[in-house]
Length: 111
Image 1 (cartoon, rainbow, N blue to C red):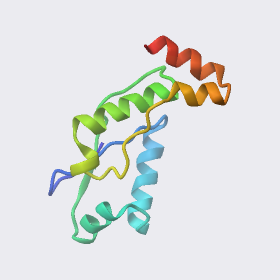
Image 2 (image 1 turned 45 degrees about the horizontal axis):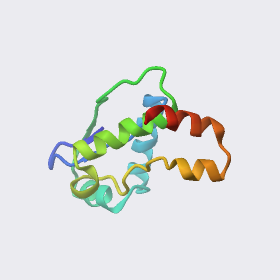
Image 3 (image 1 turned 180 degrees about the vertical axis):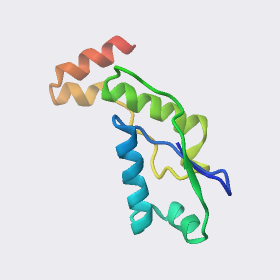
């Protein structure tokens, strides 16, 4: 989670290597390579903090993305925060068309 300490706006992301991802976000923000919502508050001089909201050990990528979607919804980061898209869901029909048996198996076990 990246949180604006002035406004309380939140960005939720996920990463396998958290420290590297935080460094990437910091570099993007310093170079102006972030979305307009972030950039407006950076230009105003707002400060941000990062915190881990959940540590997900031994989790597959798609499971990690599901947890990200959960927190984007929980904190309403798409409408009132910095997330510019809702985390994608996983459509089993797409994976059937692409013959991705690994994903078909994983999604079938979730239902």
